[in-house]
Structures are given as C-alpha cells and as structure tokens.
Length: 359
Image (tube, rainbow, N blue to C red):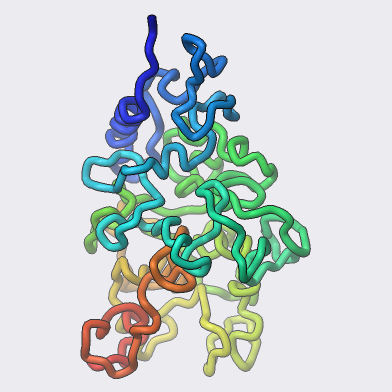
C-alpha cells in the first residue's frame, strides 16, 4: 500500500532543488523532482486526499496546495541558511526577513502589510478594497475599474505576480516555476520574482543574508515625464500599477515641469537620480536598508555600481509584503529625529538626507 509523504518530506525534496538552482542570477526552476511532489492527477490515493493540509478539495493546476501560502507560509518554518523555499509570513523581523518583508505583520495593524487574501488577511478596515492612490487611467494599470470589487491576491488581476489579464491566481503564474533562464522580462517565468515584465537581479537567498555585494539589484529609470510609464520594466512601475497617483509627478513640486526636479517638494518623489540632484543626496552610499536602483542591469550582483547613478524607487523606503512599521516602511519613521546622534543616525531617511542627522 502506498502512503502519502508528509508535507515536510515533500517540501524538503522540492526545496533542495530550489536551493541548488537558486544560485547565480538566472531564475530558479524546479527540475529533477518527481511531478507527484507538487501535483496530483486525481487528488486521491488510497481513498485519501493528496492535498498538503490547507484543504482537501482539488486545487487548480493539479497542485497539492490550495494557495500560494501552502508553500510560502508553512507553519513553523522560518527562513534560514538551509530553508530553500522563501517563507513570506515570518514573525521575527531582522533575523527572519527577506527582501519583501512579511505578511505576518498585518496581524499587528492593517497599515503594516498588504492585506492579501491568500495569506488569510481580512479586508483593510480603513482603506477597504481599493488600493490607496489607485489610478485606473494610468497607462499600465492592472485593471480599469474605478474602484476595486475584490481583495488583493498574490497574482493575477488583483495581485502583483504573474499576468494581470486573469483573476485566476494560479493561471496568472502558471508554468513560471518551471521556466529557467535569464531575467529578460519576456514572460512571467523570465521576469524578476515572477512580476510580469519587471527587470532586476535576484539574490540567491532572497536577501536573508546581505552585504555590499550580496543583495537584490532593482531596475529604475530617472523620470523625464510626469507619469514616467514609458519604461514599464522598473520596480517603481510595478507599484504604480496599483498606486499610480503616488507614482506620478503631478503635484509633487511647485512647477509641474516635465523633469519635476525643483524644490520645494509637495509629495516625496520617486524615480529621481540622487547623483543628478546633487547636494546632500550625492553623498548617498548604497545600503540594503534603503536600496537605490540602476537603469542598466550589471552582469552580476557583485558588479553593481551605484557611484554613477542611484535612483530612488518606491521600495527604497517600503517593503512589498509588510514590516513591523506603519505603511510597510523599512524602518521606524517615528524614530527619525533630525540632528540625532543616537542609534538612528545614518539609518533610514538619513541614507539619502545625509546632512539632516547629527553625524
């Protein structure tokens, strides 16, 4: 009589494959693993469900997990040097944090993480379903609704990953885990973190460990137009697909000129090259706490050079999934005190605003 493998055994096999193939800058793809470790033909073996535990009914794409959280939010599993599958529901910020942060912190406050239904989050009580800054008229917006009628998902029309032409979260990302190759943005599987069309270089352990030569490299483009949507392969454009009014240059300064470079700012800018702005901003030194972006991807992470350009993007300040801090910020904004020589000196906002602290 055949017996079902436990979730731990299944993911250990699948994960080992991820670990091997995650090295370098090419995408990790499942290879050399029996199909049955992830898929089931009839969802029945010896009169028992083949599901991992987050449901008993058959799942789309013949998968053995009912949602993305089935593999990426396994109870009791934390990111570590040996954890091969990125866990995006970790509870220990700082020691269990990947580049995107953690959906766990929505449990503390709605403002601390995206309310993604795949991770059992409830609708945001303050904002409802429609993303703040939603602009359905923006070129490239994920849909054309004036307001949203469904809660945020991991992928699809109401999500970040995969294509946006279907609300089917599995269909939107179908096949991507099996598509190895360099990140060129031509398909979901060949896009940065399966974010359709987005470019970048992916750290082999998703920034569980970081250093000056060990981190993600994000693509950015310094704005030349108000909406800056000509190049739709940047990480800022990903955010603009849902938060377009925060991405546009309209009303962020007093001139509304095409380059939007003059001061005083009325709204914090994105897609600004700190090297071009000059002044105190030219003293920015790359740090994973406040990562700038590059317009041209280097041949490898270690060769990323931020001395010629350092472009501010949305995720220079925010975590895509969540953090312990309000508005998904990478640091505690309430601890940013001008002129400080305390622990916050040289951190957070002061990575760019280099003359505002006390060091």
